[in-house]
Length: 622
Image (tube, rainbow, N blue to C red; front, side):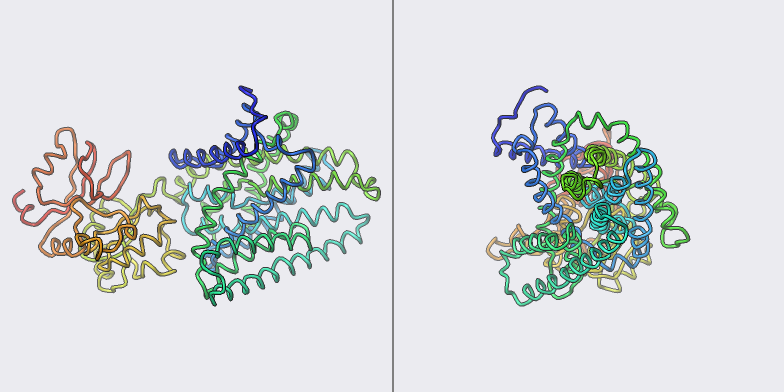
C-alpha cells in the first residue's frame, strides 16, 4: 500500500471513483480496449494501493444491507435500459437461437455448474445449486460494452444482446427458487413453495410490467407528463416497479423492469428514443461506478484463500460449461452456423448481476443459519461455503471479462462475424456524385452501402455493382433491421438539407459525432439570421464546402474520381499544383483508415491515398 487514504471524507471518495470510472472509459475508448477490464483494474488497484473502498464508510452488515439495495436498483436501471434496446423485429433472424439459449442453454449451464460445485468442490447441494443458478447469467453491464467494442454482425449481436438481458432475471429467479427449496423442511413443502413462487413471479414480473407499460404509454401519448420530466419520471417508475415487485416476490424486480423495457420499446404509439438516449448515458455512469465500488470491496485475503478453486471454476466455465450449453442447445438447428455457435461459445462474461445476487444470497444463507427452525438445515459448513461464493464469483467475473474481452474481438474478426476496424461508409442519398465516389471506394475494397428513396438512383447504383437499398435513411427499418456490419461512418448527402441534418442527429448514437458527415447546405453562405444554425448540422464534407448542386454539376460535366497516393516525392503541394480545381473527397492511410476529407483539410501526410473529384478538362490535360 503506497499511502492510506482511508480517512478521506465520503464526498472526496465519490469524486475519486467517479474520476477513475470516467478515466477508465476514456482510456478504453482511446486505445480500443474493453472498458470493464480497466474498471476492474482501477477498482482493485485503488483498494489495494490506497485503501480506497466503500467499506471504509459502511458499518458491518448494516452498511452492507444499505449498499445492496443501491446496487440492486442500479442493476434494475441497466436492465430496463437493455430492455429498451430489444426489438421484436430482431427476432426474425435470431428468435430461435435466443429461445434455445434462454431455455435449454440455461438448463445445461445450471446442471453442469451445480455438478461442478457438488462433485469437484464437495459443496453442499444447496450452495452449489444457488451458485449454479447465479452463474447462468451474463448481463448487459458486460455484454453491451463488449458488443460496442467487437461490433459483430447484426444477427450475432442481437443473439448476444437478447441472451445477456433476458437471462439476468432468469438466473436471479432461479436462485430465489433454489433458496426457498433449500430452506424448506421437506420435499413436498419445497415443491409447493417453488410452484407458488413461479406463479407469483410471472404474475408480478409480466402482468405488472405490461400494465405499467400501458399506463406510461397512455400518459406520454396524451402529453400528461411534460417533456422535461420524461426521464426522471421513468426512473421513478423503474424504482417503484423494482421495489414493489421485490416486496411481493423476492428478486422478481429484475424480471419486471426487463419486461417493462421490452414492452415500451415495442409499442408504436409514442417514441421513447429520447428516454433511451438518456438511459444510455446513465448506464455508462452506473457501470463506471459499480464496477469500481464492488471490485474495491473484495478482500485480497479472501481472494487468495479461494484462488485455486476459483481459477478451476473459471476454466471449467469457459472451456466446458459455456461450449456445452451453446452446442447442445443448438443441436439440429439451422438458424446458426458453426462459426456463429463457436463465437457464442466464446462470449459469456459475468457482470454486476452475478456479483450483486451472490452477495445477497451469501447474506441470506448466513441469516437463515441463525433461525432456530433452520439451524439443522443451514449448517455452519453451508454458511462457510456460502461466504466463499463471493470471492469465487469475483474471480469468475474478472477472469471471464478478461478472457472474453481479449479473445472475442479477434475471434469474431477471424470468423468473419465482425470487422476489425469498421470504416465502411453509409451513403444517405445515391445521386450521381455519391455513386461515383461510392463506386471508387467499393472497387478499392472498402465497405459501402447506399440508401435512397428514389428507385432510379438505386437501380443505377446496382447496375454499377454498388451495394444499395431502397429505403429512407430516417425509417425504423434502417436503424433496426438493416445489417451495417463493416460500416463505421455516415455521409448525409441527399438533396434535402433538413433530411441530412435529421439523419446526422438520428445516427449520432450509432456512429458517434466524429464519424457523421454532411454535405454543405444550400444556405451555407447566407447570413446567420436566415441560415439554419450550425448547431443543427454535423461535420461538413470536403475542402471548399461544395454543396450538393455544385457536386452534381461537376459530375454531369464529366468529372471523375481519381485516386492518388501522396508520398515524400509526390507531396500534397505538388498534387494541388497539378490538380488546382480538384475537390478532395476521401483520405485513406494505414494509421487512420478511410475517412472523408474535412472542410478544413490543409495538409495531407505522406503514405496517404487521396480520392479526389477531378474536372473533365483537367483530366484531358493529364
